[in-house]
Image 1 (cartoon, one colour):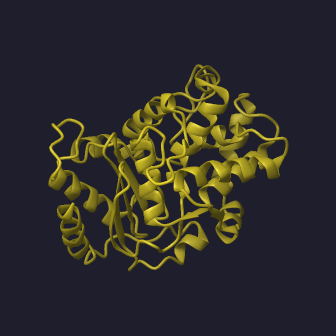
Image 2 (cartoon, helix red, strand yellow):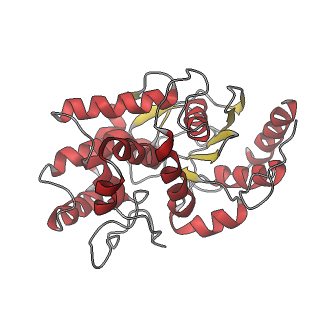
Length: 312
């Protein structure tokens, strides 16, 4: 659709001028990001892609990885087990809040915040740390449609500055949510956050969710269809942390952000959208990404609360 291309070009030119925000300085490797990098990609369920900007620049997934690992563990261990360990309620708190456990069950509120994501990562299956990491990377690669790699510099940078996440993990262990493999579980979490993708990859990963778990290009099943709805519902209610309500109001699509500057959104049965720009706001969301999604939602009538009449 030519209209997609013209809309993306127009939005790129409009928001490339925005210089608000700054890279995530608390992770040293992320602080090095070039704030001029900016890309917008649409990937449809029938395999078409539309892109503008720096769509091949690699970045670490950070928290955009959380929905996918949640799906991986759901598929491996089932809803009953996962729900016994991690809830599905939004918190209204920041993504890295330590006060993220339910009062009675001591479960993390949901898998999109750090406490929930650390717990979910601890359940990745494999006979040892190496195999668990391999299984996780292979799972993500199915969604991307190509073999992904971990940025070891980002991994080490995260691990060396993860005092808050480490305290969360020990709290989870205290309440019996995770087992004694605390450092191994944390390493799995840091490695999933350190997976390298570009904006095109992320849009195709989103499109795979939009396509009921089937990759639009490879046609491989990355995730069983029965678990896609679990992921999208939590992305919608919790994926944008303490701004999820504002996001539902102004954009209206399931989405997930990461402090590397990526945001992806899913329009079920239609497309995946990804935006990358490393300057983030105080909530950990890409500033250009937020503005771009808000405009795209209006231009393409994407909100799930409106009738879907996409351009032809």
